[in-house]
Image 1 (cartoon, rainbow, N blue to C red):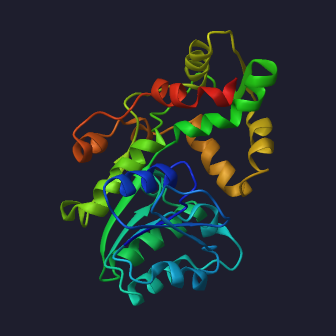
Image 2 (cartoon, rainbow, N blue to C red):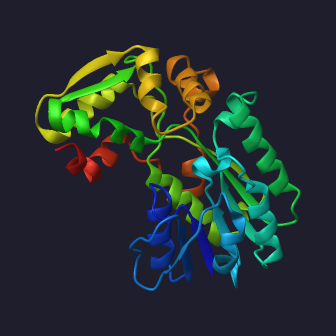
Length: 279
């Protein structure tokens, strides 16, 4: 049995599907009831209260751990999740971390994630750590404005990073959950090329077959929008990267190709699969 947390999200959903298609027994964990592939068990649990994971972990051999906002929630104990996994007989954990742990290690959120990585390394479990950069699916922030006003509004229009398709993250996670060769590895996951918000807008317009205008936000305007869905400190961390990426954050990593034997998908592939969200 493989347990997938965050199973209804941009990474967890395709990971659950991939594991089910590979013939694995899968338990999908999410905060709310959700549809899952045939043959997959679903458990509702909130990682901010790890005791709720115990039923999901019963009989599990491996765990995909995606904490998302749970890491930053008041009273959250992400370390407890690893402890409960070990106590429940789980032998392998694949942790979704962040590239920022390596590139900007001194922010509060990065320190917390680094501590969780270190705890996993010291847990006695088999482990793999995935550190993705920016997600292609963050473009969904623009979906409503594209649908209603044919405009993408974003900061730093001509500054790009090599964003990654969440399905590539899921494919790497599946490989790491199923193959012992990835034990003890840390993989940095990026897309195949640096792409700016203005260029992303052009890709979306091409997929729609209609014009989409780019409007550049100030940093303050962007932060005001982001803090509706994330802590202010995390918004600042994200904007620091988007506005002034370091050489390490601009690097196109070979790790997706190393694990999967193919190049990561370009942004246009993600848009083609998700174009209905922008119509």
